[in-house]
Structure formats: structure tokens, C-alpha cells
Length: 167
Image (tube, rainbow, N blue to C red; front, side, top):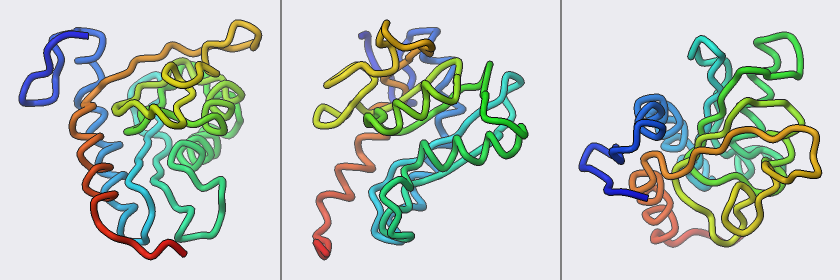
């Protein structure tokens, strides 16, 4: 996978293209713990790289089990574009998407998903499952993983290190 530099870049030009835009997803992730939510953040960029949607986990804040960062960012982007097809758009997310979010990625026709930290317990974009690239589906976005992985992982590690009320 290559060496990761202090600034979060990997020396891989494909990943390096997304290093700066991933900062926006990290900013979103930092908002989630204020409401007790896991710090996952996401942004959807249009083909011109403009931010069309953003979101951070809000399950605890809203009581909505579908309020994952990716779903919220995709919804906002679809509203911004006036339709559900996100052709040419890129989703950047700090944690590998789960199966629900992977389904939303495929169904929204995103061109690519870029994620930071791998989710070995629930990841559905290459680690545990690979829903987004399943050949049986009618759409398969490009997947780029490991962008600012250390920073993304550190947010999660710190969050889970802190005791919380399990309710």
C-alpha cells in the first residue's frame, strides 16, 4: 500500500488527489461526538469538485438508525442536484461504508467512493464485504481506500477510548 507521510499523503497519486478533499469529511466527523455519535463524516463532491452534500453520524442525535454520515450526505447532494442520480460525483467518507451505506452508494449511482479507515467488523467496500463492486449489481463505483487513514482511525480510536453511557 505504500508509505504514509506525516501530512497524511501516501505517495500514491490516486490517493493524493483526495487528501485535501478528505479534510472536509474529517471536519464533519469531528461534529458527531458532541451528540454522542461515532465520529464518521462524509461529503459528496460534484464533477467540478464543489461540495454538494455533507453529513456526520446523527443516529444518537435523531434516534434514526439510517442517519449515517454517508446517507445524510447523499440525501443532501441529491436535493442539491434535484434528482437521485449522482453521476460523476464522489463520496468521501472517513470510515469504510457499511452494507446499508454501500447500498445507498450503488443506488445513487455515485462515480466513486473514497474512504479513510478500514472497518474490519462491518465494512462493505472491500474489507469484510465488497458490496459496492459486486459484479451482480448494475452499478459499480470506483473505490479508493486509505486516504488519511491514520487521521480517520485516530478519531475513532479516541472516541471509543472514552467511556459512554451504553443507553
